[in-house]
Image (tube, rainbow, N blue to C red):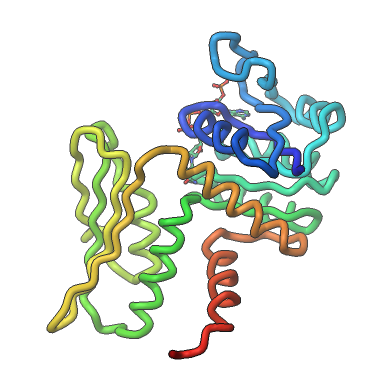
Length: 249
Ligand SMILES: NC(=O)c1ccc[n+]([C@@H]2O[C@H](COP(=O)([O-])OP(=O)(O)OC[C@H]3O[C@@H](n4cnc5c(N)ncnc54)[C@H](OP(=O)(O)O)[C@@H]3O)[C@@H](O)[C@H]2O)c1
């Protein structure tokens, strides 16, 4: 059994906690959040309030874990990072929008432990990214359009769509964003060939996908030496290893 500490218990963290609790090989040891434990929230007996480096070091010593899964905020890595690295605790940070300084810290922590940062942690989006890049390699001249749909109150352009644009060398300004009712998240890459069209589509159905993605990321991360990794890189490595044995029919 791997002992896991979950950091962040908001919209994403709650769904991730459910996935971790249901997993047969994982033991959710505690959940760290900023505010004091709230008895009215789920799993009150697992909640811990952590607001300083001292709080995290104390928690790691009193209730040791093998790995951290972080769905809190980009700045929290500065609170727990050094203490986790000093104890060899693996880190999966799913926080979007890390600053350059925070990413530099994550890379530095990778000198002592395994660290993975992934602003897009679902398995599906990482697969879509790899598949889209593969198609672009085969046909670098193909027309590419990126469409994203999200709930009405999401104002900014999806970070995932911008990541796709960057990876495929598409101008971010040409991303089509639709805001519709309660759509959780839809990303589509359309490849226009002269005589055919290829569409790669990903739809998020529930936030539990963040949890299954984090578990996949952790499992891949634990096969690696200490260092700094991204999920797309580990997934590509995994896919290439699996496909290497395939023989053409
Ligand atoms: N990679 C992905 O695919 C993906 C998907 C979804 C979300 N995320 C990321 O996950 C994070 C949380 O998103 P959310 O929508 O769940 O936000 P949210 O609903 O606002 O929840 C944030 C949670 O983190 C806790 N928190 C914030 N700063 C903390 C700190 N320094 N130490 C400990 N706990 C801290 C908060 O504590 P309190 O409860 O005490 O306020 C709260 O429980 C964001 O960074 C987001 O970008 C990533």
